[in-house]
Length: 437
Ligand code: C2E
Ligand code: MG
Ligand code: MG
Image 1 (cartoon, rainbow, N blue to C red):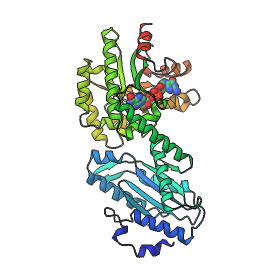
Image 2: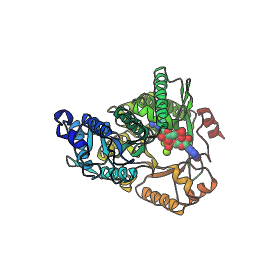
Image 3: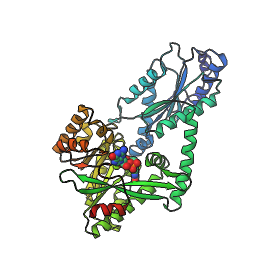
Image 4: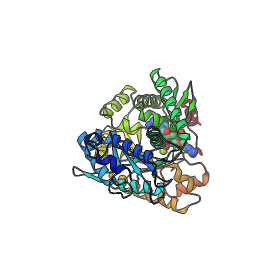
């Protein structure tokens, strides 16, 4: 490889101080050398950019020193992969790049999978076990005549694409990404404006959760809606991730909590015994004033804590289960209920179910869709339900759309049901009418 010559002259300027590995300047030098020499081994040479998911939370939860150790261990692991050995670079922060001058024409996805596999194994740092996931962007080097800057821009777009579509994956750059990225930027600007101008564009709708034993409505899940003046109706799956990465979820989350509690109070005053479930994002859960702010809101709206359930997703847990258990116990200590949402889609393990203090487990709707066609899916839900009941956790199934699904789930003693079969998410007024029917 032509890189060897440039390497010989490489001094401290081309090394990352923390990891003592090549840095971004060396990456640029190596790439320029490859392009200049025109010796790309074949059309399948490529570059990749790796970004740790939720790295901020690692620093937040432990310390920066702890985070540093993770970065060092990561680059060592990456350097053990033969295809990228010696061509791994730290760009600073939690970003690493690599070059594959692909002599053997190995498939780009096979190498990406190898990298994912190696990083999937838990890290041991300061006696603690930590699991991480990464988002990885990939770009072929010979796609047209590319400059180093052009490659970097594409890599960043591919990583952004991973992040905005749920992280923990690799994505090969394609030309649609530029458009997608620009759309996300527009969305972020509009979202900031909407939050700063007093939440007028936001609304809360409520979806009934049904008690499977008697078919009655037992609670409501509060779901956020955004009707943007500039962009029209934007679905939560599109704007919540942007609200999370931009930190705006904190203000939005507080707004939704307030609106939900105010609504429960109205129902209670009207002698309607309905509790509310509110979705909390990972960032909200890790705020140091979480407990006091939830308590304040409950007091402000004079709602007993048992009428509030906080729904969290599994991505919260991967960082530090011990810390998460503390947070959940503190919330339960003030009387709030806890549900784990979208169970089965992420890192679900029975170990999480065993260790976490949970009142409810909500099984993701992707499983429900399958139960009519695949006996294993029903067996899975059955097993989870038995396991949960053993430790006094109730099970709720989401996304029920047919009577057959409902019957199958009732037969295996699921506790709560939610889905379009009963009702779509509706306004508070419509919900009230539904209750009085
Ligand atoms: P989730 O918490 O799992 O909410 C359930 C989603 O499934 C809702 O989508 C609901 O409309 C949809 N759903 C319910 N029953 C059915 C059904 O039978 N069939 C189908 N196809 N879908 C059904 P929605 O309202 O679009 O929300 C999507 C996600 O956005 C939520 O998933 C939640 O993760 C997030 N989200 C919504 N509101 C908030 C919020 O206030 N805060 C946070 N942090 N996240 C929120
Ligand atoms: Mg939910
Ligand atoms: Mg869910």
